[in-house]
Image 1 (tube, rainbow, N blue to C red):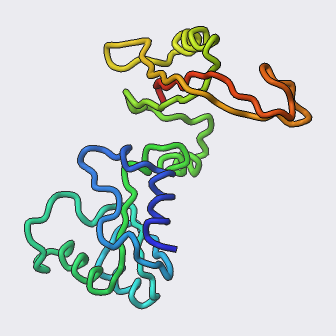
Image 2: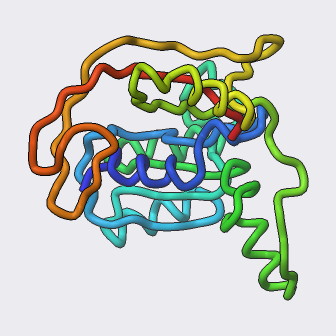
Image 3: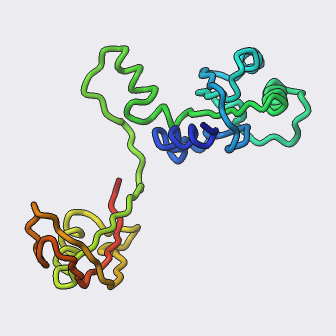
Length: 205
């Protein structure tokens, strides 16, 4: 397993885009293609944690708090953060942080603390605004307008001050229904070609 395999899973669970503006979550030190022996998990990355990782032959550290919050103009070992970075690089140790992006998701840090307090029926108090997801569907040409309007009516297609937004491409789809199907068009067990519209739109997450 490589660094990027682990970070890909972590980024999926707690997306980097969810972090606050002051934060610095993600891969901070390391080569994404580095093969991982084992991972050391910690709240903070300290010089002692780097030494522990070396002793345990762990070449990746996953921390809650980033070791770097703001930009560095030099790395000379003058500060504890610089010393950590130098030692991590010298020993081929990747350092990853999942901070405010992990705090504010269901199943994340805040959810775990709520569970410890015995709270139930919890939810995100302050949700992120303006996040969109893409919807892609394939519709028979003669039904495209009917489906498009239904999707818009359900709340999709809004981008900023515009609504009813979609992108449409005319093409030809193919399918073959199995023995247990009742195709709307075509016959089961026979290859069928149908003029279709590839319809793309967005909807609020």
